[in-house]
Length: 173
Image (cartoon, rainbow, N blue to C red; front, side, top):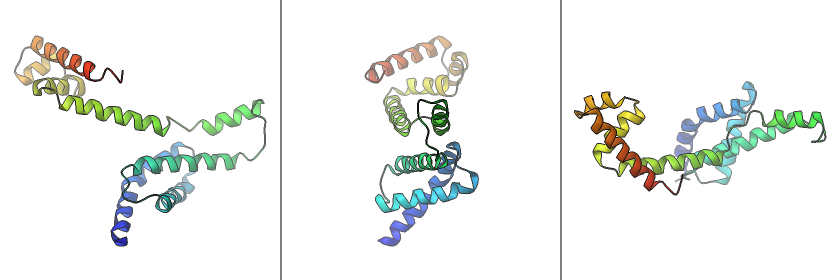
């Protein structure tokens, strides 16, 4: 059983190490110390969570984000008032590398999945029009040629698909 857990953990490490390196670099961790932070992140995960947790990616990002914040705080060891110019500069510098919060990213992913599910439940001719017009960015004339329908019929299907999506997703927008 432990061997299987180790294999899952190694696989998880291989799956996430590149993304975590990118995040650590984004947060301003020096290049020489990124791998140390990544390994400490995985160690912390391994000590506190099960390896088959379905939210492992979000947990790893949160752990790494907190480690990056701690790292940045260690760099700024001088005590300054937050109201002073030096304090405002230090706070801006600490938070400069931080993008959107992980919770925002998770919410966005959840919304994406709901939209995708809604589209997959639509009529197939609406799905085709959404694919070509909205995702692949073809014009209605080009989409009509591909699907063998007129551009007017293509625009009509697209309008109906958008209305259907708007009704289904009204609680989210």
